[in-house]
Length: 330
Image (cartoon, rainbow, N blue to C red):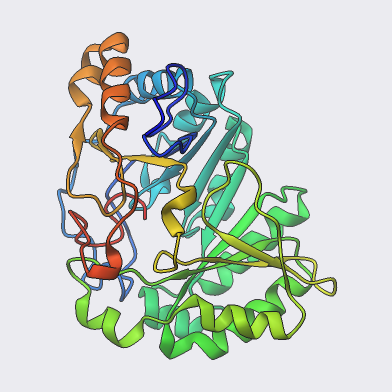
């Protein structure tokens, strides 16, 4: 196995880990049928990382080669200090991109503050473009408001927008047709995400999982072409078509070689690092963060990277510690 790069976080399989997915809260206000059908059931006031702890974390990760940070949840906009968190991430000169994944339920009101704080990219979860289906999936009648907010963001010249849509068998045909209409005139990337099995969704997974490969073959037959993957890019596959302003992408964790290009690490809202979304162990970094022990955290981080597995084992129904997809931002 190649030796680890002393400066950058490079795992034993020579994958450069330049992308941190940082969950800032476990709280979520949706009741998505594939994730939290009964709503959030955890602590009313979870012990979330503080702003100084996040600043320490970002500084150590950036010095070790992290260049992109995505803020996730739960629903990250439920943190009242999210704009401050964005600003802290952006203030580090080594961080090139600060991104946010959100259900966008308050985006029209909150986005100006996030943009002013330095937000570079935003991913909006829209699991259906039909208001009734959206309600059936999420428990919220927010579809129209979210689409209006998204269009307003684009009209203001903020074009680093992606839409995440979960691929569910029951709705796939209608959702694909709506997705193509959506990206025809909008310069956004819409990514279909394969449903992943967790500890709590076994029966739902068995009835609703659909392989992305089926959709991809259909798009290819309609003239969509695969975009060449950039160096150090993640595992998403993206397609473009000359007649469309936007693009269609796929995140297919059950596909062969999905983990080959893994470039990310995950830290929970309580400061536990997951080397793999579906790994069997969470490594607690909170002690270093509470005391501001930069050197100790740096040393521990490089030690842990040696343990990053080559791949997950979802195909063998091994989903590690993950009970639902809201726990560490997916």
